[in-house]
Image (cartoon, rainbow, N blue to C red; front, side):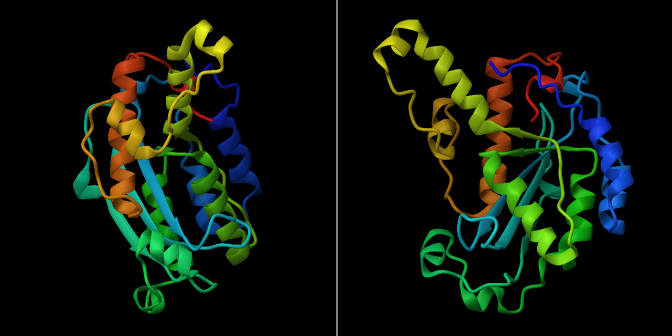
Length: 234
């Protein structure tokens, strides 16, 4: 499974707290991050999912955000949050087909900067969980760069990376020699391997919940409650 990650996130947050210029980012980093030696069973997570105008974080924009806080044992649905936000560029027809969010729905939605205070408050001292780290972290970083001239960094766990390692381990030596494919890493297909129920896709709130449930299943199947957090975060 995933190896110990050498990145010291608590120290990185302290450094970023000294360097940040915007008050909201200062507060976020000053809240700190738990130590990597903390166990998975003790950790507070928050699953996060975005729907966007496209796949290029340098050009495209976030149009909806879903957050679901959880732990190894429990999902806190009452604390879940969902926001529609107005992008700085028009929605592409292809993206409308995928996530179903239309121009009229975002026309009166607030800009991302308006929901930034509750968004960052919900992330404070929690480890963010996503399905494919190349979406949420760069999209939020570049979206803030365009608005406040600063990026954001945060510790996260990637359920897709966990599943990829699990499938590679399951394939075994002979499978590697034969070049066998490891299987789909799509969120729905990963969930199916753990007998989790199918959900509708491309809704930020639903996908965040689906990601939270997937990590809970992965942790129970591949790890122990006393496994250190830095085995998974990146």
